[in-house]
Length: 272
Image (cartoon, rainbow, N blue to C red):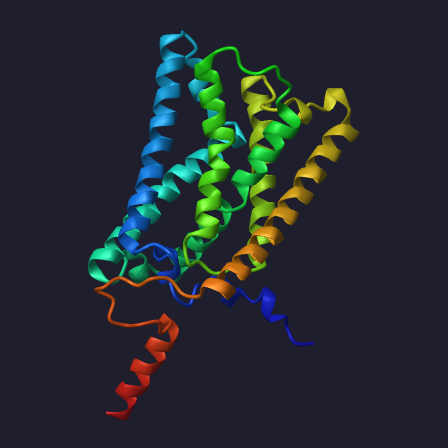
């Protein structure tokens, strides 16, 4: 029985890295600057929260933050905006990004990193405002700003990465990676309970009903599956109606995929 191409390991390796550094509507320079602007905002948000906790004698919360899925995904956005922004600016100035020279394994990891950026923030926003937030609205303006930044604007940044760059739809195997990532976080949550003595989220507390815990876990798993296929479909539509990204003025290769370029150069060398 022939193996389905949809689940081929070859799909994990992008044939062309330029879609990560280009946009169908923005020149590479503007795309790179916007990504670095998002990085600056995310970094400022995190630093401001840490300073606030330190000033208000709640510095212990800084260490605990790294057990929260919300904060971990926000750091993902922060580092993605930095890495992708730098790659894009290098591509804009030189016509090729550092990503193109990375080993294929790192290129595959970068591709999966992108998939997490356009899926997990939506999951965070849905779970926070739909499950965790009970109201009333935050009486302290700072708390309101902090929660909007990390539980609402995160999805806005993800929506930008979903709609503006010229990226391709993620392979189905990335869905497996997302589920594994959630399972690893579940392990971290219970490790936090064992070492720090608290549940990062109340719905993970089995004393309130093991069936309730299972229902929440399966519900979140179902949510990420739905989000993944919605994202995959939206990217497919965007690619269909917008096409390739705007190339750098210094990129002399046109729209020829990297794999085809390699094969062409190999054929030329063989004919000599």
